[in-house]
Image 1: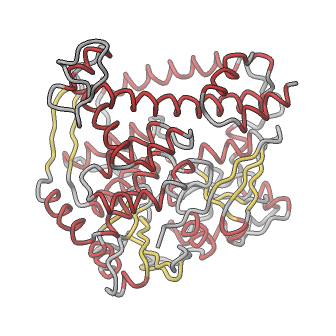
Image 2: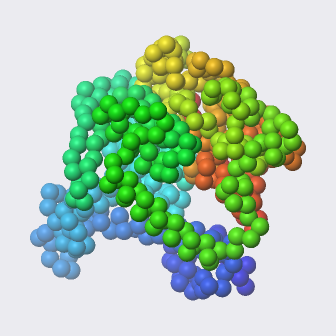
Image 3: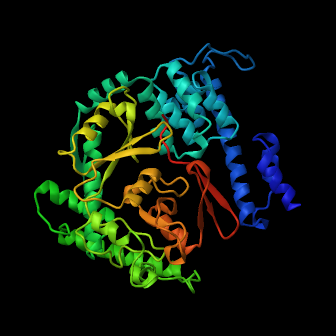
Length: 500
């Protein structure tokens, strides 16, 4: 009976029949896999209903104010005052009503493939809205061509990844227009500051050169990680903020950025509050047999005898001051944490683009597409940008060549693994590989090698998830991955490649 129910939940297309079935399900009687199937089916139905709602909004937008009740007639298109009827009917503000009507009309009339995918439950409303927002001012023919290329892959991507892919193909479709829009925006770059209602301040820049912005952001992260490794109790975000202020106000620091007494006291209160919440949560969880954080990150020699995993010391030699990695950097699996140094920002471009034979955009992981001329500037200006690394790829996204490779050589296997992965290999995680731990898929202590085909980039959270919850990661064909849980569930991760 339950198996038949779950099969119907998996196979029914969104619509009245699925809605009736969902209304009869007792979720408390389902096991973990069944609960997931139920949530997935309901998500498909919700997407279907949201598509129908947008069609309703579009229909209300074409109702004339002078049409008497009982008479069915429509205007050819909404007019200036259509949003008022929608706002009054749905009890919303005029801006909210305008946004809903614009989304509905755009999907129904200009991007019908996106609307049909939403109606079928293949994508959700946030993804449909990303298509609308990114393609809003784009020529109809170009927009529809980009949609046709990406709509089938959209369900596999986060909204951020989808937005990045849309921007990439818009750059590629019309490089001259992308360059024109970039120059117009960067000419308006500015820094603004102000105060918040709680008495704190904000200071942010906008319309900045993307390459320098990414490098500055990475530099703040490296300073924060170095301070954290030295024992500073502040969070990485707090350390980034404090380093940011010190750098801009001219306060020099060696390892730990400064902090005023009031803010320091606030941080201590926050740590105590978090510790109390964590202690309360742990009291409800059976952690018997699980290694502590101190036990989990142990010296490599404690795992693999006198010598650490192949590549551990060399990775350290290549990336810091030549000393061996200590307990903060070595995981029980034989993997390594990113070293506490100024990091490498990777820029990916095709070989024809590097040679000036094409103007396909380059790509900054987690930032998105970059103008071809900026990509070439970064690749050729090694002296001015020694912290940058570029990767030239073939049409399938496989790295062919990298450079510049900083001042010291680094272990080639770790570098190739990060270039291959580009981001954390957990489902829907977009943390750049340059900030991730390097994990041995098959643990070194169990005989796993340190070759690239056994190395994976995992962010700290998903590295811990893999070991603490005993998940397994297996490579599939063509650069895809599959995560296996002890429950028998699995999740597939497509290869992290940029489209040619």
